[in-house]
Every structure is written in C-alpha cells, then in structure tokens.
Amino acid sequence: MNFFLAKEYIRYFHLKSDEHSLHSPFFYHFHLNTIKKKAFSNEWKSIENKRKALLEDESEIQIIDLGAGSKVENSQSRKIKSIARHSLSIPKFSQFLFRLIKDFKFENTIELGTSLGINTSYLAKANSNASIYTFEADPSAMKIAKEVNTDLENIKYYEGDIGHLLPEMLNRLNPRINLVYVDANHTYEASVEYFNLILPYLTTQSVYIMDDIHWSVGMKKAWDELKLRKEVTSSIDLFDAGLLFFNPDFQKQHYVLDF
Image (cartoon, rainbow, N blue to C red; front, side, top):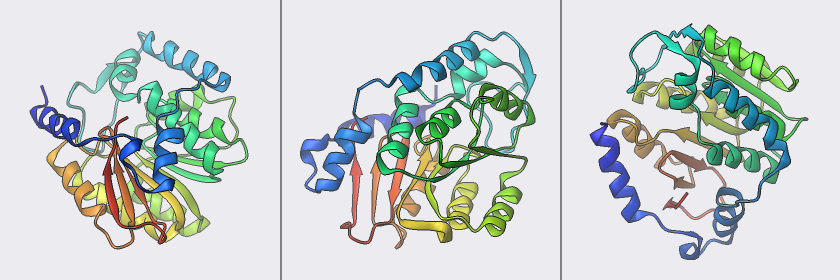
C-alpha cells in the first residue's frame, strides 16, 4: 500500500469543498459545469469501447519507462489489460478533459504521457479543429495509442524522451498553448522542468494540469512549489490532479475541491 498517498487522501478529504463555498463566479461555474457535470455525450461511446477492448487485451508488450516507474508493477513485460487497468484515467476524469476543451474552445493542447491513447482520444474528439501534441517515451505504448486513434486526424505524435523532444517542438512551432495535461515522468525534477519549458508558450487563459500531484513526496513538492509561482494566479486540487490558472484577473487563491 502507498501509505503516503493514503495519508494525502485523508488530508484532502477533510479539506475539500464544493461549489457552494466558492465566491468567485468563474470558479463556481467551472466546478459545477466543467468539473462536476454528469451529462453523458454520445461522442464518448466509441472511446469507451476502445477502453473496454484494452482492459480485455491479454497481449504482452515490453515497456520502457524513463520516469519514476510504476508502484504497481515493476516488470518490463506487461499485459495490455494490466497497463490499462493501472495507467488509464478513470472515465470521469477523461470526460472532464473533453468538457474543458469543448467549453473553452481550446485549439492547442499538449499531452505529456500518451500511454495507450484513451485520454488522447477524448482530447482530440472534443474539438476536431484543434491540434493535440502528444508525447510518449515508450514505443510499444505509442504504437497502441496510434492504433486506438486511427480515426482521429488532429493528433500529432512525438515518440521518445520528452526532455529532448518537447523543447525542440516548442522552439520549432512556437505555439500558443491553451491546455497542458502532464501525466509523464512522475518526478519532482521533470515536473518542474516541463512547467518551465512550456510556461513561455501559455496565455492568460491557459490551463495547466498536473496528474498524480499526491503520488509521491516529490510530486507533492513540485505541486506545492508550482502553485505558488508568481505566474500562477489560482489553482485547484482535485486530488487525482491539480489545475493551474494564469489569468491576472483572478485573485490569488488555492482551492481544494470535490471531484
């Protein structure tokens, strides 16, 4: 058992609140309509069918992990269904990412950590005119993600070490990034490095999402430091992930909210 994670959850459980405690109109509606909304979209059916297929796939693949590794499995040879069970976001979170792009009409998204491509599906399907730049170090996982998303044409894949590929891509394209979703290399050093690399390309309306902010001492340290950066004007802790905002109109506030 991950005792650090359990301790963090107990703390989160006692600190979290709902939208009724929010005085900011923006964050009240954001929590109610983007984070917590339960309405189902028919656009999700095909993606969840892909998830189901992965969760039933007995095939084994060789995994190359350049990050902090897995706290569930240490073997480099893993069944696809096991990777899917332990690595994929729950549908509720994937669908939150979909609503975020849909609601705010985001056009450029960076995803660090493609994994098997389910979140990538949600990100790409939310706006077919948007560009999704997704990065994955492991070639076996990337191969599956591409197969999962053969029907989606707005995904641009980057396979290899994110620390090398990301700065090259940013320098070459000089994009304005609306949404960042980081679920890769769960270390303090990498989390801070990714933020510093992407920060110059964000806008005041951008949202930066860090997954697994309570996963380890290092991840918690990175989250606690980044939310206090002067460029960050507000943050939301959903336990599974943390959201950073950069709008200068927001009053500096750090929310711990129910998900």
